[in-house]
Length: 138
Image (cartoon, rainbow, N blue to C red; front, top):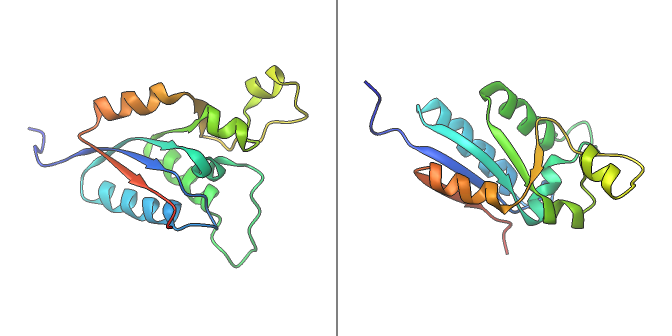
């Protein structure tokens, strides 16, 4: 019998790594939620949060590499992670399809992140029991 107290979460991250605590706080929450028996349905990156999906991030060696931390967590738990296409394109984040479409020199989307529209956010809101937002401070 399923535990009726467990929840399914969609996480929305709008703050960029290294300029806000949003990705770090969201990852801490996600790890605690999984450990407590809850499920993360998906992670949706919006606004500056899409920087979390960049394969070109190169922090100093004595700092956490938040994009790789997130990528490892997502792969380990089979969680879908989507970067909003409009936010991503405005900030220079592209997958191979958008690279070809806009004739750009390279793609820079870190796996397992994907690029999609707001429909993915809406679907997450419909299929999750809770949607939590992690914004940049301000």
